[in-house]
Length: 366
Figure 1 (cartoon, rainbow, N blue to C red):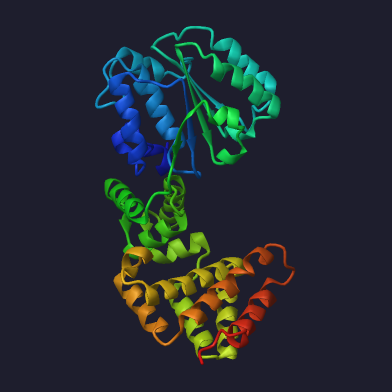
Figure 2 (figure 1 turned 180 degrees about the horizontal axis):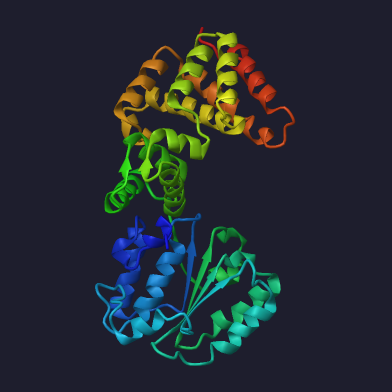
């Protein structure tokens, strides 16, 4: 049976985790020294490794022979923890188990000693979804935890947690993964899977992932499936509904030269080509932002993370535009993005933005 890439390449040790070195190093050192806290808070956006690291840490805490702070997966305890009926590592989704009764049930169960390892570990995902009464019940466990219990709370919205909970946890903030790390990881996986790929497709997939490993691998899966085992740029565009770079450059040329009719024609081409108009507007915002970076930053290649020929083309296009003009254009198209979701005529909104882009307040060069 085919296994999705994000599941097949889920890390099993701290060394396999992409990014988050500040977290994996700290946790592996705690395992080595035996200096374990009773409660941890993992906060950060989706797909950055919170649950994966929680699982690795939970197994490492119980492993009889940890390897550099990671579980060995060979000892009797590691094998027992991998069984589906294992009760020493319990994962709970607070989004669907957010009532006080579920938390009270945890309070009752923590009294029992672990079956196989040294610790009974509870991984509570999306903990911010708990009700107020459930938080109060959880607080009792955090205040007086049994020595054999470790709680790992995961959340994408730490600001929603009560201060009484935050103050009792050792907190780790997960960062978005850099484009360079994502690209290296994706290419490594493609090579292992013997998947042919285009560099431009990899760049597009990485850009669309926005710092999330899971999102990147899910997109890559879809692109490879569409291409019958090949990751091509055209298929990546089709999956993402994104706009071809050439079309973005063509549109920007029309706007920067004051050719309203030409801009309307590019919008028409995009729509007839099957590009979602909301995605098109978002891509325009990003393109004008990229032009501004290309014009103002010496190290724009590292910031843009785009092929060298594309970066050079951006520099050439931005050369005759002022910084003020590019900032205006970026803001102009970003302002219509929220409205496009609910508009009955999204095309008209984009065309109005085109008019403003060419005749807007102070946008054009003197």
